[in-house]
Length: 249
Image 1: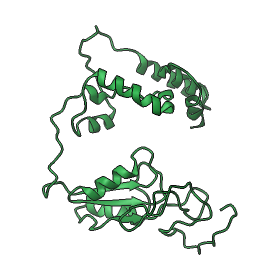
Image 2 (image 1 turned 180 degrees about the horizontal axis):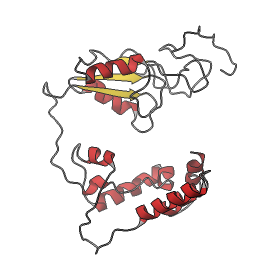
Image 3 (image 1 turned 45 degrees about the horizontal axis):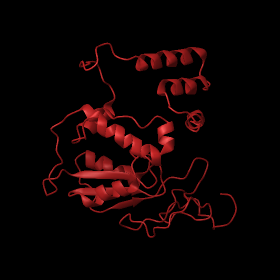
Image 4 (image 1 turned 45 degrees about the vertical axis):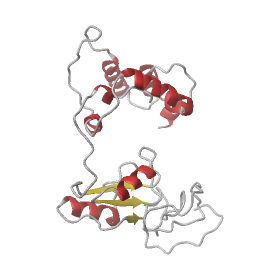
């Protein structure tokens, strides 16, 4: 991870993804055989498909998340829209540009007939799991979906930043989902679950601001994790909670 961050913070314009990925591979502690295999795989991914410009290219595509996202609904089609979008985004998200994240999505060339289901009683039964500090899917969007869509319940994991919330490893988060997937009822109300302590720590400390029973923040004033303030959603340890102090947890 440190190699990826270092590469992303190295000024380079323009960013050439293949060269950037190769530098990251070279900085790893992989055995020579695995490093060579990684470079070979990278070369295969970077090789342009054979064919003439404008010709349809057919092949095997195994990036499952794109099959899911591109068929969820209509995406704006065409290269021109996304090039202009990426140009605007680069001005306010320079790190994303350096990391090579501003690319035209596959979905720009993936037409679908999928449409948003009607927001009425026919809407499918759904549970939304959302960690409070997820950088990939902002909390505000998960909260809006979990509390605003019909026939939908929200499980919000307080003071947690993990992206893949299930399985989480606690009964409070996992049990309602397992029961629902096995044919049971979805939770009748919003669940605000306690986040697990960080590795090597016994207690969870408050980040952002506390969530109320509806998973709403009590104040708009954000803050970093404070090692003197215990999470209001409780702890997952049976050890009595320490009294707040100015010392290191």
